[in-house]
Length: 115
Length: 113
Image 1 (cartoon, chains in turn orange, red):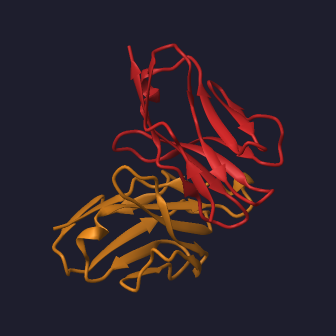
Image 2 (spheres, helix red, strand yellow; image 1 turned 45 degrees about the vertical axis):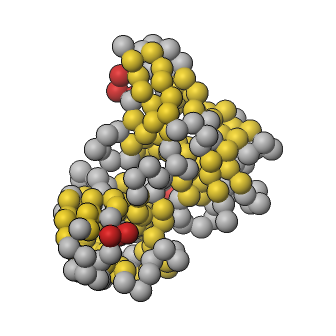
């Protein structure tokens, strides 16, 4: 296993369009997280899955954002009617329940630019 | 809400020297975890070191060590024998019994030959 992967790595879109990102976690990891990182800031938590259940959502996750993890494996993050303020790096991380400290392993991120 | 503060936006160190990155946090919890993550340019974030709050002993991983002062809510990272490959953004992060990591704004570390 090569770690957490994300697709695409870069996405440029026009304001008002919908975009979808995919995250493939480390295969045996049952927990999956989405974060958003804007320029000059640390990552900010968006949402968390344990298996297929979405257990926690940040208030940053507006109604235009939806995340799924249908079979408890890969996850998708969709942004509808994108706005320029959505431009950021979207990071996915995964972890294994019970692992000391619940260490989260991060993917390379998807950089979104909204024109 | 928990907050994590990194007061040094940028730090510079010469190769083979030692540098310390600062981090303070605010929490009312007694049980939590603290982390330092490294994010090299255009590369993914990796965990450098982890500290459990209930452990008094400071964590150490090879050239990386922490100074954890629980009462002062301080968690600094010391990098010894700095190498060119240590150049990166370093993020301090906090997690309590929840799932989300709370990150500071980061410190950009420059390593000069």
